[in-house]
Every structure is written in C-alpha cells, then in structure tokens.
Length: 115
Image (cartoon, rainbow, N blue to C red; front, top):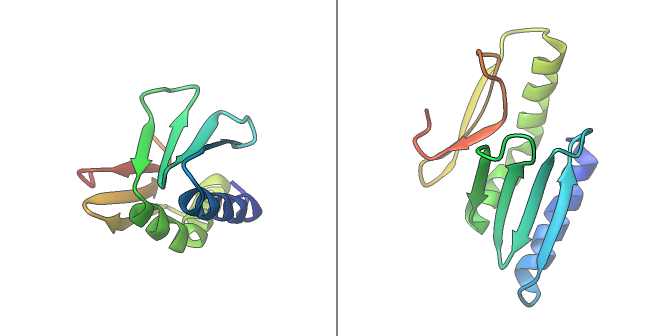
C-alpha cells in the first residue's frame, strides 16, 4: 500500500466516524485483492483471495495502526526488497498486534493473541 493511499484511508475513516452511519469500501493493493470497509467507526480489512485472513478494528485500534503505518510500510519495503531479515511486531492495543515477518508465511496481520 502506498503512503498516499493510507492517508486517503485515514481521511475516509475519520469522515465515516463523524458522519451519520454509512459504509465506505476501498479496494487495496496492486491486485485490488484486499478490501477495507468502514462502518460506524469500525474498520474491517479482509482478503478476497483468502477469506480467512481478516481483522476488525475499533476506532482506537485503527488510530494506533495509523500512527505506526510508516514504520509498517518501511518494514514491508525491506521485506519486498529482501535487503535484510524482517521481524517487526507492534502492539496496537487491547492484545492486538501487527507483525511483518519474513517467516514461512509472510503477510501483514493483526492477532488477538499476539502470536
């Protein structure tokens, strides 16, 4: 995801949180295989290729995710370039973590257990 796309999503989520309940959806990624939905202050992300990969974030968790999105983006760039080992993990509140790793299964994920 490009930084410009993330800033657009931040603005959209902020508007959706303030305005009367409405649903906004965004296709993400170069293949447009990920979907971000914003509805009544709740943000959900899922993969259209692997439906089991999804996460729902409260406004507080979304805020924490946005605060660290540049760090996540830098780690993802390192991962894509394979310039160094990547093992990034950050707590985004209430037991949810974001991780970017070059392990056997590489993807951005938010986990309730942090594992």
